[in-house]
Image 1: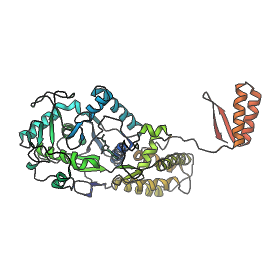
Image 2: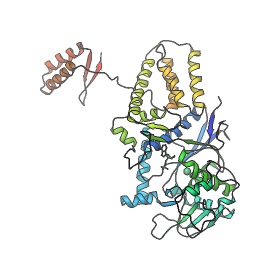
Image 3: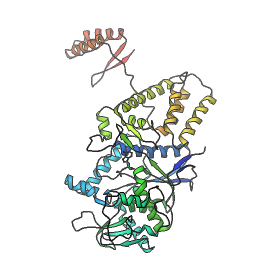
Length: 460
Ligand code: AMP
Ligand code: ZN
């Protein structure tokens, strides 16, 4: 079946045709200076959906995601301090300790969200040599030059800049608050390699003295190392479009004359209560924050499916609560279908599967795909054949639909009281009373079972 993806580069939906048998993808990974928040994870849930949809269509993947542990300055426009170095100073730790810790937490969160991990996850600091060589080649080709601060990319050497975003360079400069560096040939020239002040912590030997890489160069160097000069898909968040990805394309053109990826896909932002997520507003949540409030991480994943990845999504706790109950209802519905022997005409099921497949192949239209999932759950009769199809569909959803959920029910006050009395009777080793109360509770329609931790209660 045809797959259509929206390509930021051409600004239209296009039929996807991979360059080879294995689809090669590069995703810009996290900057590991702090806990990743649920907005960041919206982007990685999108990455997960992309992987799962391609696999559902039978493709093999070679997918690379980097971990930025050096070079990402506070502003994407080469301004401010390195984020990792800043965090290290603040927490009074070694920068490697910082990046190692937050990488570990990030990978744990990825697991909790059942995000299918890229085949290759690589750290910037493990690829300094490759980055340095990449910059040398750009300079050799005449696209880079040295200043007292570092090595800069000369955008005037390109036939077109920018090409990914529609921003106008002059407008950008006029609006920028950053003071223009007089040594730069063009105000929009960006740093490939930065000369380290003597007090700077993370620095390496290079042809230009002790220095460290710019942020954009790591993705160019690592994508080339693992995927070659050209590959199929490059992904990231929409904030990457105007600077980071634009500059990756420029670097690649300066290095080998090519645009690295055929398709560029970007996930829109998660907002909170209709506005920006920011530390000062106190509305940044982590996966751990959601868990502590009693929400399963996979409920957040399901919440993300309520909006198409190219639209923005507004996070509210009401929305998350609905997703949490929806997750339970999906799993309970799956179990009910699983337990039924009723037969359904295979052509009916095929039609559902086809519609689901069409939705996901239409630029990962998850809201539409979820509509079809709900139709299956609510089908006029229960059938194991539907459960089997739901399990197959869960290869794309990744929400563990086959995980058993206990049915939630309200227990009346008199039963609650009997449970309490029985608890007391057992503490007093009054087994006779305990058994009598168990029978009474059963008469009321509940089965109480004793466990090591206490008891469980189920409907008869
Ligand atoms: P960073 O760790 O800052 O490099 O960001 C990691 C990823 O999260 C990038 O792909 C960003 O584009 C993405 N991102 C950051 N904030 C949000 C947000 N509010 N919603 C969705 N994605 C985001
Ligand atoms: Zn990147």
